[in-house]
Image 1 (tube, rainbow, N blue to C red):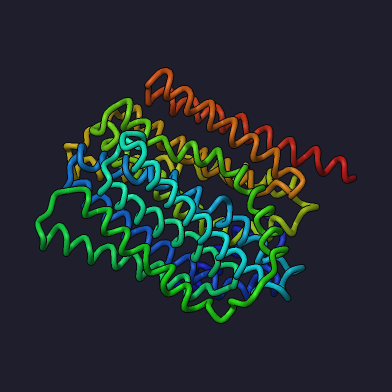
Image 2 (cartoon, rainbow, N blue to C red):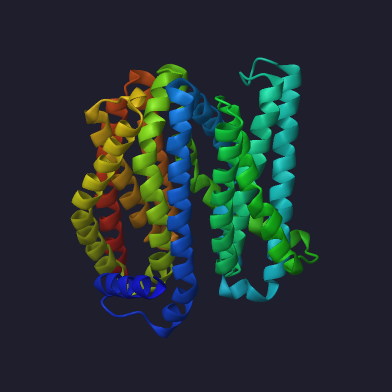
Length: 424
C-alpha cells in the first residue's frame, strides 16, 4: 500500500515540478505515506459515522447538531487566533530550530491563556446578559467543552506535524475516528438515544485523544521561555489570524443557514456536505501535506507549477464531479428523508472543488504575497456571506462562491506570473 502511494506521488510530483522526488522528499515520504493512509481511513470512518448519525437523527436534529458545531468552531478561532497555522510554521522554521522548545512552550502558553480569557468572557456574558448568546447555560457548558477539545485537537495535530511526529499523528487520527465509531455505537445503537447532544459528546470524547496523547509525546520539549519569545510568536500568529478571518466567516455558513432558512434545511445541506466538502477536504489536506513544502521551496518555478496545477485540476474536475454526485446519490438512497434539490447538489460538488483549487493556489503564494491572498479570501467570504444573509438563497450563495473562486484563481495565477517577471 505504502509503495503504491509512493509511486503515485512520484508520478504526480514529476508532472507538477518537472523532475522526480529528491532524496530529501523521499525520506520524508516514508512517514508521509502513513499520514495519507491514516487520513483516508479516518475520513472514511468519519464519513460512515456522519451518515449513520444523520439517518438516526433525521434532518431537524442533524441540523441542530451542525448549528451548534458551527457556533463552536467560530468561537474556537478566538482560542487559537492563528496559532494552529502560524505557530506551527514558526516552529518548523530552520532559523529557529535551536530555540524550538522555547517557542513551543510560548505558543502553548499563549493558546491556554487565550482559551482561558474566551471561556471567562463567555460565562460573564451569559451571567450578565442571559439572552445574548441565544443558548441556555447548560448548553453553553457543552459548547465550551466542544470549543476546548476542537481547538486543542487542531493545535496538537499541528504541533505533531511541526515536530515531525507523523506516525504518532497518524495513529491518533485513526484512534480518534475509531473511538467516535465506538461511542456512536454505545450512545445510539446500544443506548437507543435519538438526540443530537450525544453526537456532540461523541466528538468531544474523540477529540480529547489529541491533546492528551499529543501532550504526552511532546512534553519533553517544554522549557522556560522569555517574554520576547511569547511576543514574537504572537505577532507571527496575528498575520495568519488575519488571513483566517475569511475562513472564519465561511465557518458560520451553517449557523446562518439554520438561523434564516431553518434547521431542517440546514440538516439536509449538512447531509450532502458530507459527500462533497468533507471528502475533498480530507483528500486535499493530504495532497497539500505532500506538495506544499516543495512548492514553497521551488520559488523560481512557481509559474510553471501553477500552470501545471491548473491543467491537472481541470482534468480532475470531471472525475470529482462524477464521484461526488455518485456519493450524494448513495446518501439519498441510504436515507430518503434528506431529499435535496438536484441542482443544489450539483452546485455543492462544484463549490467544494473550486474551494479546494483556490486553497491550492493560495498556498503557492510566496510570503510577500500572503497578505494579498488573505485579502482575497476575506473579500470572497464577505461577499458570499452577504449574499446568503441578504437574499437568503442557497442556490445564489453557492453560485456566487463558484464565480468568486474562479475569478480569484485567475487573479492569483497572474500574481504569481507577475512576481516572477519582476524577479527576472
